[in-house]
Length: 111
Image 1: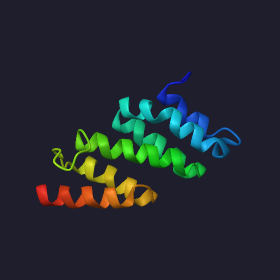
Image 2: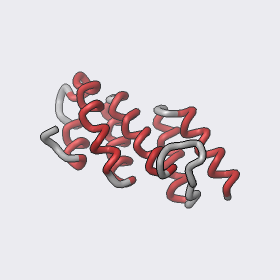
Image 3: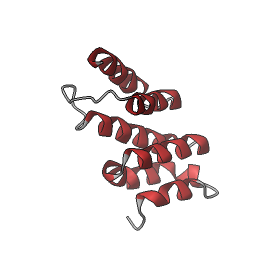
């Protein structure tokens, strides 16, 4: 790839980055999957702020997968306040809304 996950927010802030959103989102999927929740959230926030919807969607997907520890419908969900806030952030960003809503429902039923 040639860059690391902590580079993605900087890349998103470069002039014209939104025009290369599809390329960047594809290039950072693996990095997002290997990143921490905090790193994924930083990419999500920056991508939303810069209008990079594909990268925001990739980051939102990574956040949700991290929180479900595998992404499956039977995955264990730890419903800490921080995790609920992270899912709300994904939902509020407008990306992955149905998946975020479903996860919030699962979290509320496991509380």
